[in-house]
Length: 144
Image (cartoon, rainbow, N blue to C red; front, side, top):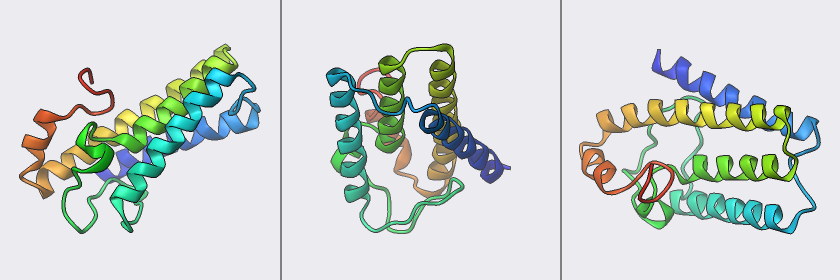
């Protein structure tokens, strides 16, 4: 059940992202939007580099190698989902409309579903995850 829910979350994220591409609103000529999207991309790269060679799974499941708490994971538990959300919300602000708001909400909802699924898996796999979760926020340092 958890795997299917996490795949559903992924589908929401992918669908929203594809929607931005199809509507040609994923990038913007506005310098502020470009700056936020570059920062989001840099955060994603930093997180992937920190995560090392671990593979991506379509469904939520921990990878071998232990809990990662360094790099951007030192500040937030889900920097890749944060980066994706930051990227698409910047795209929304670059081309605000009902459609782009819906697309950004789809990506965000999918991210939150995936986060919930992954956190349940991580709690079962890594006893130290509880303490890690107490000292870091999910996506926004000091807030959420």
